[in-house]
Length: 120
Image (cartoon, rainbow, N blue to C red):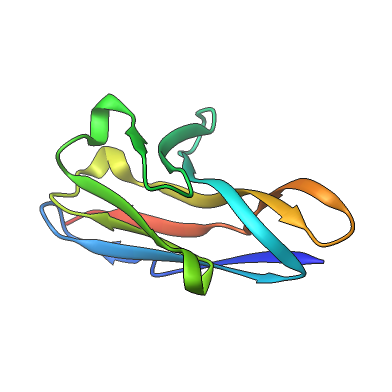
């Protein structure tokens, strides 16, 4: 009923930039909180950044000042601008959303993930 599709991952050198996008589609009434999570090999998935429908943001300390989360509510799309990338940012990045689905109610939805590799 609701699908999240990430794009924008890839290989980048240390110090470089990438912009991730997450597009939501389906029987969406509204989207509350959206967030970007990441999971590095051998590590637990962690919340990188989140944003409410009103635009309030939250970041994990390790990305503050380097990453910027934003969203376009009219397009049901969320972005993550990642600057000054470091090798430790290498991970699969997942989009997550708390979606109010028409008729069904609230659902937590995950995207399939997009790989970000920071390496020289």
